[in-house]
Length: 235
Image (cartoon, rainbow, N blue to C red; front, side, top):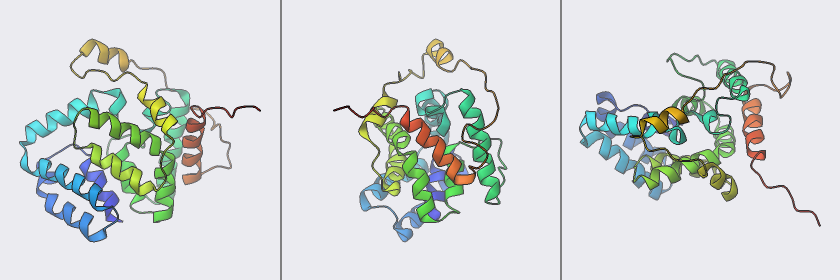
């Protein structure tokens, strides 16, 4: 499923190589046809922007979006675990899931980096990929909403991920994520406060030793979802 590879590439730091590869990326999106026409048009607009803009302008815009705003972080567990102990174990579990699939992280990047996750999903069955995307759908929907507020074409990538999951995220969960203050990327003092580090501890998995691989990732995402789901009303 090369469409996942295309989405991964579009979320990576823009380079000249990426700009030159745009015709190939667009061809994959159209030939595989995994996305509806509307989503493909949005991705084509992003591709055209990457191919036609000054590379330094692209890189500056990218950094202002994803590197200087915690609410737009491209690390999945940042949005559900922050810097808590749970995130540390979740990262270990996710790395193990990649290794069980025969994949090794070659880049100096955390396992929950969304482009890296999409590379992994491109090697899995469509059903398995959709299960993972569905559990993270509320995160992708919140990222899409924030990017639209900034008139960013990158919103099209996250809209595409929600569509591929074929499971509309509960609106209440998306709104819960959107409650987090969206820091101005030019306000350095606010950025320092938002990114203040908390200690990460590694310890035994709260899910037990019998959970592994993709099931463990899904379990952790479900755990994060339950934390914001409303309790059932009593009669």
